Length: 356
Image (cartoon, rainbow, N blue to C red; front, side, top):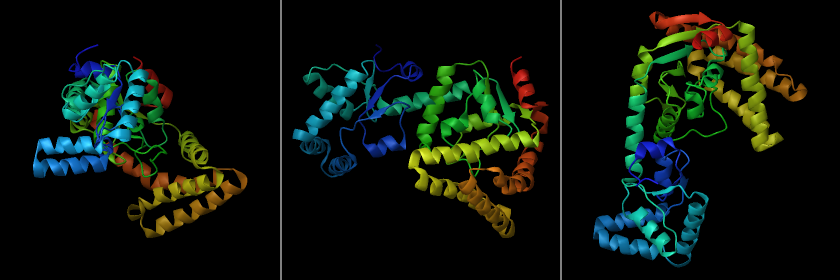
């Protein structure tokens, strides 16, 4: 076991981390796979922080011990002990490798458990993650382009050196892109990206041609700059094949996922709201008349899907949405990068080209 300073090795190995920061800090940014077992909850941390500012470090430390004592202390100690048993190769981690992780380490040691900590804490790991991403994205990059429904994400997922940015962001990029998995904070998304790049250790990357934003997450600037210089292979599949992919992904699978998560009744409401929200998000760009027309067709399609289980009626609004909005918008963006395009073909042809 290393001494908790070989940050890159710790990140690459997916080393378990028992993160003892408060929940609010953890939500703002954490490493993939870290478990949040706080020394202090948010309120306790806020009280100790206020005390530190007003009365200094000794008074703050004393208050911390008053707040986390007796039964509360024992419950938290039991949780740490159990986590240490489950993850014998792990590390304790706090914000900067300071008092919190040292206090937890001491309490564990007194209870008979010797467990290492990350020197420099989350901040050191975060800096290592940022540096790793900046280094990894200097490798050659090939982007997979194409209008929506061409299977870009699927093709990226099939490549050993493919990095599914949308998968990491828990979002498929369009106004209909949300998944049932909440998006990570920006810092957590960047950390997950860094660890993914470190684990794959490819000589070149295959990525989907993304905009700057994927839902609420944005790509790190160093990656955006490299993607702007990258060559592009474009998938041009027949329209019918694209429709079939989109039907499966957005109507069949999303309905299934919502039903599985929420049950039949609420699942249907959530699924219906999801599709309506997707259209509402681009209302201004569509214009009111076209938005109202597509919404009416969506309502009819949802009614038919609920009555018969058929998703065919969704094509009545999906086809014009693609032909009048998504396809022209993406083609316009692609035209601006025409000199970067090195190959065009159907899904299988692009897959074949990538394998050479």
